[in-house]
Image (cartoon, rainbow over all chains, first blue to last red; front, side, top):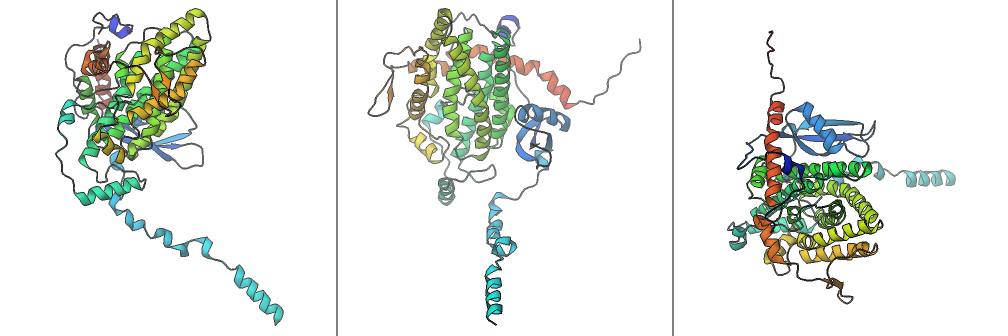
Length: 125
Length: 331
């Protein structure tokens, strides 16, 4: 293809670009933080994603850049990913019967029939 | 912006299929979970092949975002007015942000970000071929912003319905931002197309330059590939290259033609019976040459990326030890 490339990129024209290999060392880009965003006062902070940062302060700055560029936001939390404790995914069956525990829900407590029947009985007594 | 519409397969893996033998029971359970529409999360069991293919795909996508911002970034200082300049800065920042989102998504599969960057710099990892072409005029920037982003959205919307949770979540966010990229690109494109004759000529010339790379973007026909079929069953690949290319033509040929611009191909036609677009041979040899590193800008893109890595090193080092005390000499 084109051997003589008259680049339009100012970096190509004006900089002394490095020759040869350049290598990034392990962990040079630090660990990750999880980001939680609060859209509105009074709402929960919600997990929106993760990012790389050297420490908590920088994580907040990066969080604003990465997750707060548009849309509503009033506050953010950042938490080191390694500080998050979670259940094992294969243990999800321990929640399997939870939806069956209807005695914990308002919907199954129905009294209207009984009241009507009682009132009928009173009337006929 | 841009997923690798086409995910490049290294020669070595093309020749020898993976030798890993998976536990059939686990494999069946895995397939059943995907068929039920459940997402796979980082700590779930997954076939080695699934993991490898996803790493390759997400990594190439991440690199494409970062490298993809270079041809446009070049034009920030030369945008025709303040409004376009603000939009271009915002877009380029989004692309870099997408790269970061994808690097963290890819890391959940076990490949560290540093290693991905090293593989990019050494030329081992690929990125989308289109970014090895130059943006010669401002009209090229509008064609990239409109048509290349449009092509990327076709690809990314499909992939966001895939099976790997972290990749899907990243893509949902990316697609939301791409909507702005596409609109601002369309706006700039229409502005030139409805302008003076000189502006129209400039735009048509740019469309002519980008026609082949746009067809290449979706990759060669993969209808016959067995490999591709397996990946579609696992919802790693969500649509065939041909189907995505066809969808792109369906959506965007009318939008180009309605402003009196056209693709430079007399054979670009839709068969009303089959709904399929046909087009002239886009020179797939050129496509493979560019992948091999012989495109007009391959060396330049990597040189700029290396420069960024090296000049940023002192910042990363300073951030790693932000509380280092220095003593100022008294005299």
